[in-house]
Image (cartoon, rainbow, N blue to C red; front, side, top):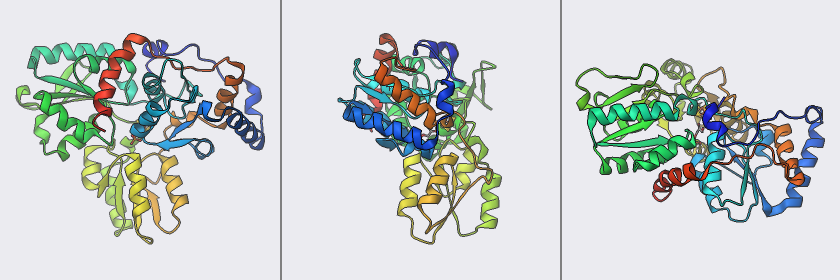
Length: 371
Ligand code: 13P
Ligand code: SF4
């Protein structure tokens, strides 16, 4: 479930898929998807995130990580409709980066992100008031793209920027040239992992708890340089340091490769960490016969296992970890969305209001011009 109030601003109506779509054979659905694609040609663009199911990825015009998908949508000037196979915040970003006349559809409105849900705009504004009282004008906000358009707009208005897992390091470095302190939201793990990699000690990182509305920090709060919002990805939290220890015992020659949304201790115990594109590239470039334990979403891990039979690849957590919301987008929903284009009764169009877009674009552009 995405933040309901913020979502209401960026959608028309949420409807459930008609029953008859669920009863179609795979062959029939695939045939009809291809027919719409063929008919619309370049007037249609289907980007898909690396965590999408194979049954959806196979019809994508492009796949990518969050940064690449944002860039591809921004560059695409010819598509009249973008059917976004990913989650709600990605579709919002695509809408904000494309022209007004270009429509962005999300095949299933239940495709939210539990991490983005951990920060809403009211909590963010209240937090900022405390930060201003505590630190004065020494703060700049950075938000992971896994956040609502309203939060991106808040960050844009205050001179801050968005970040993705593939450019968080550059963006934190840049932010520290602007102000002494950073509010990093909503993923505490990404913020902590990347700040630590940049040489900032854990003792200089405080946590802001939006539920208790208080800092979690031992010592003098004035020593804090990075304020980490207390949010996390419910998928990547499932990769623990115990899993790394177990792999070291079971597969001593395996390399451990994780996404930086994993907890700090897990990343610290691993060999490599990076975005979904980094994970894919690392495996593609690895020598035949090498062994890998990967800590990221199940659809991507399974695709890598399937595409690289010459390498031994396992999930770092043996109970494969799916992202339930990414999985909401399936073949029936894709077909339903595509067929709504023909009738012009567009299903689940994502439209961010003009004011929010204008402010959020400031934050997105500060990232894109440094990407
Ligand atoms: P990237 O693809 O940018 O690494 O992000 C992973 C993710 O969790 C998207 O929600
Ligand atoms: Fe959100 Fe985590 Fe799913 Fe990515 S994997 S969409 S961060 S819940």
